[in-house]
Length: 96
Image (cartoon, rainbow, N blue to C red; front, side, top):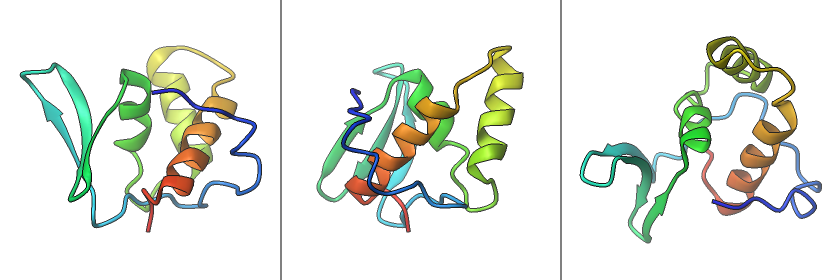
């Protein structure tokens, strides 16, 4: 997945991101990757995108997601990448 952060600057990600009811996030063992399924097709996700979207349940803020992932992977400064993915997802209609 490629994210153009310049095009994402117009709309901020939702405060409590929640994947659309039209989508199903699932792990495809045959492909060894996470995918987003909809009636229009399938989007293959890289590992980072999957980790972010798995936390988009309407209960976690963007800051919660960033904090959890930074702790889980012992990394700092990922907020811009998380926000870019969420903004791109918003543009694509991935959130309710």
